[in-house]
Length: 301
Length: 301
Image 1 (cartoon, rainbow over the protein chains, first blue to last red):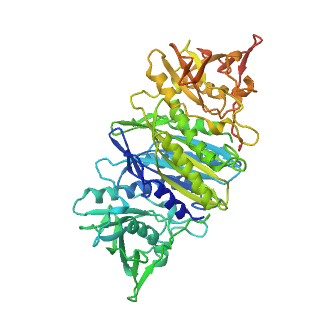
Image 2 (image 1 turned 135 degrees about the vertical axis):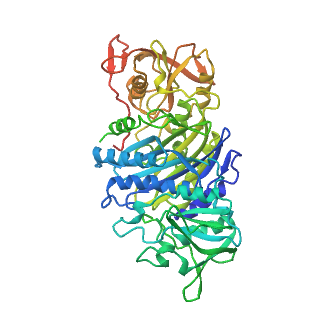
Image 3 (image 1 turned 30 degrees about the horizontal axis):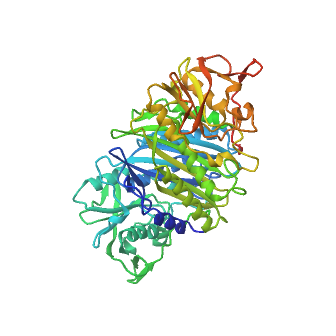
């Protein structure tokens, strides 16, 4: 069974949600109207052997990643984080000191981004380490930016550098990812940018840009030469490696070349939906190559 | 390592939370002020082999339990559920049809209680089934009822029948638990009841009433003969079996004998904190027995 098939079933079943559901399943965060307040929510799991490797990665960095992975979803909505809860399944031989170090790292990382940890659930079991973090956010004056807002002729942009974020031992840049919260709000707050759609890059550019296309009913043409590849990697890595936790967005206006030192690259533009693959890449040799969603289907499947 | 030890560490580290945290870790739900709105949150895990047994329990009932377990926490605050997100780790041989049945059961159960499922995360892995559900709730005109509000001379009450909720094969009444949301709000809204403190019974009466005592800085004396034991069980089962998902509360006023057909039993009263065990049970033979927290430490530990 594939995750995506199940998610399609869940989305289909969610068409008749009550009016209090401001954003239903299928975006980086869902949102509810509670009282007069819009509250955004996201949940993500970090599984040992899939999203981290506890055999090679210090436990503090594992805890940091479990929080940052969710905060990257907050950035993708241009929202402001306001709190989190965490659930953990700890292996029975995990050790009390290591457990305290893990939770301290989660709490401190969350607090650094204005996101206090207000509750949790701990189980000890025979399996591997599993952390499930739920983060809440508020629009705080900025309309949430959806995956579904892309418009034909928008430019397509990505932040930072892509590909090679996960090395063979489970280390690498994915452990140092910075959630692009401030950057996203800077873009969303500037009407000259004309920000239309946004997603965070967790499964590889091909898959994640494909989600924007699918939800927006559009296609995308990107230029291989314009993709900001991490040193030592090529476009293939950027398209499919995943775990970058950068942003991909579409905008109709003038987009700065960087925000607070984070580079922003224009990699293509939005076109009408095509019948085959939603994303087409123009190669350095001039070829036009339709991209299958070839992103990172997480290793545990 | 024991869950409780780690939780104490987490609570201690949470003393300096920002003002937006209305209720910090250590109650049935945490709460945040988001905009002008108080939003309550709880997270709970359902682990195969610990909280359910998928070898003997239909998958629809597993999904139901994953939602109800959280809704029971909402009841314990006298709050109203308003939405949920769910994360799942599915075994690689789980099967697509079974996965769809599981999610349909979760979604339908949540909706029945006014709690639409607005997002999720699915992983497929080599381990056992694990479901993590986060539920949001709002006070909706009722001040959240904490564990910490018990006052000396309050009566101590429980709803329903306790003990024997989990049979040897993992079946039993825990699969049919009804979250006491309406009952809790009826009690909280009636000033004649004088509701002071409340908790839901998931770990056994001794442990959970012990939490009220600890958080309130009081002690409790309960009468063995007054405990509403499920047919075939005795006080020992009620004190320690767990998984009842009934409510235990303290109140200073007049408490009805039942609400909407659910019986409410007075089982004792609140006393000054004693040095030893917080809960003392008067036996049917007139003895006074201090109860260690002897509740259900979940089976996977």
